[in-house]
Image 1 (cartoon, one colour):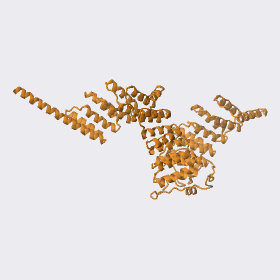
Image 2 (cartoon, one colour):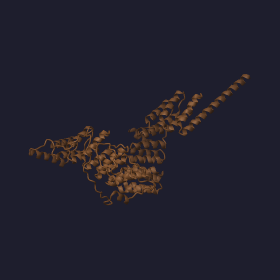
Image 3 (tube, rainbow, N blue to C red):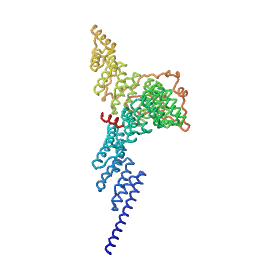
Image 4 (cartoon, helix red, strand yellow):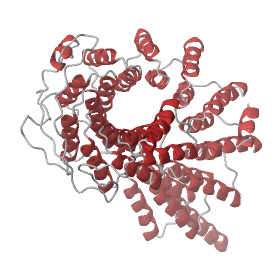
Length: 594
């Protein structure tokens, strides 16, 4: 009896110790969970270290809580390290462990690792659930792997797992990011066939797919379905639909959608107005674009740099270069400062006013404000030089692109060749054509005609004939005038027994990445006259007053532009002068055809 009593007391003490250990473990786990929810992942991991130091073995629940803390912060590397530590400490991971780690990889845009973890689950004898697949599909969506996302969706069906709305939303979004419109529309229909009700996220993702695929009609049809059957469209829905109209150059429909959404009680935001202004820009409706900016101010909606970039581009498309420069000057009064896209649009606008000095000034100003001009910026500046027949400045800018590590594209070369051709610089034209070939750029028929005319006008008939042969070799057929005029001029020269070997080039300049070390800059360009626009011969101030945008009183209106006469540091070798002017079946179908 005494022995039995002793055994009972030992068992009770042991049970008490085990109960106490469970309580301590549960308390540690609770602290890790609380810290993880508060985003304090470092403190959560410190709790695990305290447990090891106290001789308490964390269980899988405590480890899952620590991985979840890292997952909430998108720390995929830490999550993977924690998963490896679990194995080392003899803890068997479960489905929750893998799901948290896959979710961390999804937030870190590591779709390959997410796929590997999904496969590793099966190797460990664990069956992935819907959450596992949803996180992996979302990882593929962020990695723009639409084909893999559809394969995973098909795999769910094959493993007797029923995809939910989240599964389809992630797969549709993956299709949208890759401009796969038809698969996205098919997935929407498959949802309905499976008895799932699409939510607003589903429709937003599908309309966004239509926008990226330039299918504005399909986008508006989906919007109509929402208005008729639900769910109710939100501001993101309208933004995507308006962007789809913008991509399809349907500016009038974009304006209608802006009216509709406000009529249905949906308040537009900055993105809404920017997308609508962009639609007007593509439709060359610059006055409508300015009115939209005024409407933003009345509604208390703050424009951003994208808004102003679209507005300046709209003025550029409408050949309102002075208005474009005026808006650029007024941006700072809204607390918004131009970026590379804004400057590129403004420089492009200068080409319509043949204002090469201002274009070069803006290019130098970009460097001063720490902005790196890109190929589009330089191409716009070279195009301005072409319009002003400033061939030396065009070649200097082309050379500057190489020196700053930018590779000129076809547009850059086309403008430079046209500038040289219009100025009779046939040797420079031939060198530029050779450079294009050397750097893998294919001249088009227009360039060939320009080069042939440059040679013919300087009576360089041998070169003109060679260009004609090269043009045909590249698959372009010269027009009748170019061909007959060149051949006729050659026959005339031969009949008079006069065929010059070379025409002297004045101020000839080497071209290419090892090209000129300087340029004479712009010479003798005349200030352009005020353009005759829809409002008559008005200057920028008068046009702005006609469509005036109220400037907030708290904004000082101080311009960031340099005043006339103040020099801006020049990064290049050119010169400028300052200017103050300014079911199942469908997903299987797509998976099987990838």
